Length: 137
Image (cartoon, rainbow, N blue to C red; front, top):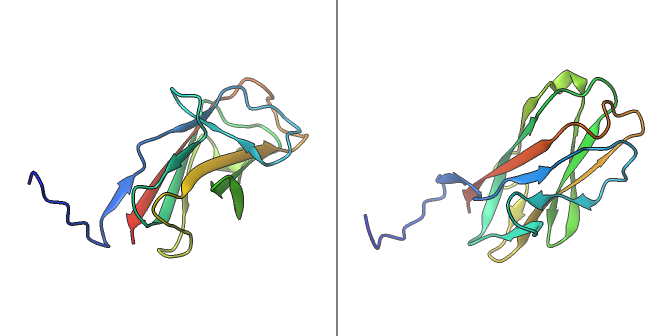
């Protein structure tokens, strides 16, 4: 309904951004900011307080060795919440959180950091895309 701005706690939505990395390379220390696809920015402000409930990761091909580490960032700083995309996870994976486990306030800048170990293969030819689902707090 136009003009209705009621938001319920159980409402979930995807943040309107996809973080993307072209050419994931091996031996990169975790902490490199992924850029948002289509713009030269790596963070997106939350429009209201929200709890992250899931993060989806899609690769153009599976890694055959090693891993790519992803970390959620808030205001440019890693949160300590990491996930390793390795050969066992194939080309897509859903990373889930309990509601309230990772909360951002209105205006907090949400981002995705990445890194990889030296054994990552193939190096340089795989693209990664990440999207985030939140529940309004």
